[in-house]
Length: 272
Image 1 (cartoon, rainbow, N blue to C red):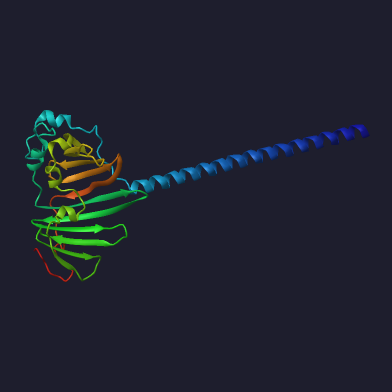
Image 2 (image 1 turned 60 degrees about the vertical axis):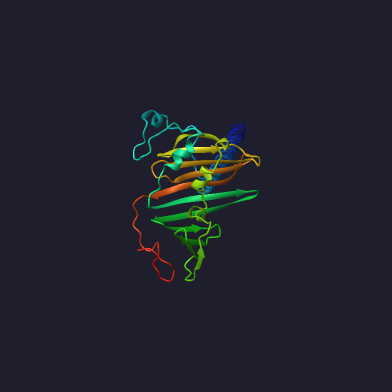
């Protein structure tokens, strides 16, 4: 009948409308899921990039809790001729003065300096053979500064230039050429200036740790000296609680093979 036909058509139209609405709702739900997934992936990528940037400019220094309690109990550190004494502010300078640096080694480290509104970073490679020290320092602008000194004369040149300057070393030490503190900086301290001294671990290196008291200008210095090599492996300097200098060793080879490390740009070999 006409009424039945009209009823069936109305029912089919209703089902069509409902199916259309369900498809629209499913499409909107899918769009929301897609947008959420894209936003999540974008956030992950941003976090990866930020962490990557931070990692390249960061030097991890030993934590204050990394104290070698077992070393103090054992009385000796393997691989070192230094017999452990109790390290205190009044004994630490004598302990450091007893350390000896190797006569031959090669190492790399990073030096960072911070100031209001910016920072600078230097990658430093050092080769030592007897009295001679070769320093190759990659500066913030990308140029490489080379210096070669025996404590009496210093040669300086940049990048792959053939010309070089010859200067009297004067009061500029090999450590200062490397932009790191010297033994004299620690040994020259008054005992009253040393706030803390003990044995600590820096990565897998056993170190003597020294921290100065804050001076009238707000400066505090921290030093980690490897007891096996006698070399400074980490340092930090703060002013009013803000870090202004940080240094950390990246690699160390105690029995290196030297090639042209002690050769000047004109081919002159200062040490065979």
